[in-house]
Image (cartoon, rainbow, N blue to C red):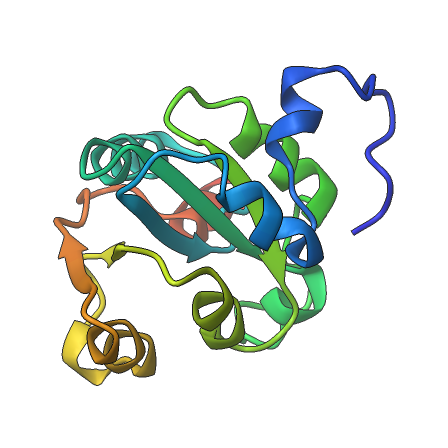
Length: 166
């Protein structure tokens, strides 16, 4: 992540964006239960906003971890994705009332970050089979819950990008 340009160090947006190396100390300040979710969140749309609001309602704090640009490219969504760079995606997510903290990960999956954070609840979108995810096995191994929230039909960044291109 590059330095957040145009933001005062005292900005509430800046305060909600947390380098993964600082998460351990920042998490001690947050009320529990802590909900964790992750994704690219490239072009934020209604489906994302509803999903994040539902995730936040499950606990007292919501940590959203975004894929870095390099990590997002490895997901195979196309060479021009993500459309919005990681710094911009972090600021947009930090601007949501539902989000308590925003961080990032450069790996293909957030397993290392989840192991560090140890959330009380792991949440994914309804298009995931939770039993197939290594993340589910990790959180359940230390007694946390993993659940999928209903997918908001009709909303997808990939579909939105296709529509814009047409």
